[in-house]
Amino acid sequence: MFAQLGDIQFNLITYFDGLNASRRIDYAEHATIEGKPKLQYIGDGLETITIKLNFHTSFCNPANEVKKIKDAAAKHEAMPFVLGNGVYKGNYVIEEINDDIQQTFNEGTLIAIDVETKLKEWVKDKIIGTKKGKSGKKKKIKKKNNTKTKKKKTNKESVSKKTIVRQS
Image (cartoon, rainbow, N blue to C red):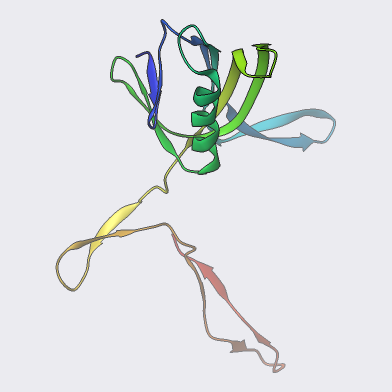
């Protein structure tokens, strides 16, 4: 086995034809007066992996193999992607499936098909800390907006205003 996505195994000897991974780094571009724009790092983009597969009746049932991939994509769930050497790459969803029929029998049964499957990294929410509840057990907390509104204040002219304070 070369790699596995969820329950789907990709075998190098039989039908695996290549793997391409790419990762973006996101930047915001800010215009400047009479000069070149400035870039500001925003964050890392999600990794995309493209797997090229060849299915042929000499070593598998092409229709069944394509169906496995399409059924997995239809679930819209993240699946673990693990290389054959045991390296866990992370969780990925199937973002795109392109199939190119190479050969069929007279009645339309597949003989050979090339499939390109694009995976996109799936990242879970980050937990930024823990705190102990009344029971003494640690609770997971997620980052939330720390903006609080204070009471209305009235000035000499009887105009009221709200003071908004952002706490970090």
